[in-house]
Amino acid sequence: FGIRFPALATGILCLGLHIGADIAEVYRAGIDGVARGQWEAALAIGLKPLPLWLKVILPQALPPMIPPLGNYLIGLFKETPLLAAITVVDLFGAANNVAGLTYRYNEPYIAVTVILLSVSVMAAYFVRKFERSFSPRVLKVPRSLINHP
Image (cartoon, rainbow, N blue to C red; front, side, top):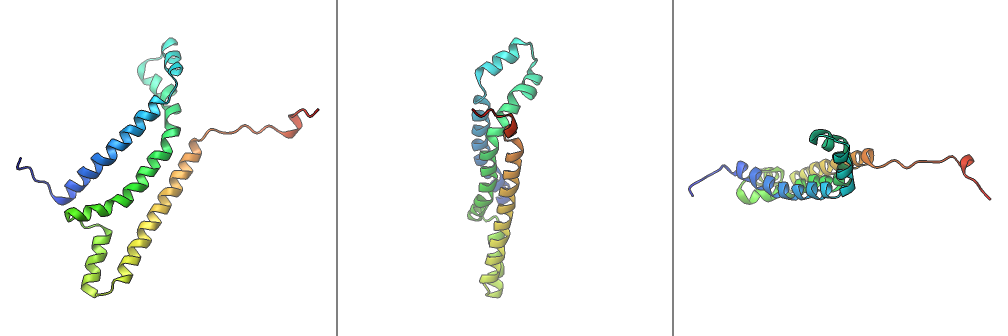
């Protein structure tokens, strides 16, 4: 067709479409997971579309969506080195350039590994913290209120 994009724009477009399709399925499954009775009850009490989504549907649909969305976020860090196939220089590409200039291969690759590992671990930590903040709370009943025969 004669349409040409720079390598970086092509990489962003491809990864965006790939991850976007998977994330759209997560959203669809999360919204589909809300019981039909919740929709009917909200409509029966006369909620308009915006309050229906903000007060009934999304609070129930978002918590189950957080773990897979976090997995896709972390997986995106792992998929970015694939952009090297279309000449986008990522961290490993930069490390390869430095290694080619200095003939020292261990230091640049270890530095890139530590950077990517630390970013992935921090992302996993924040996703887990975010997930716990949305998880349902368990009611703790004091032992003094439990009847023992």
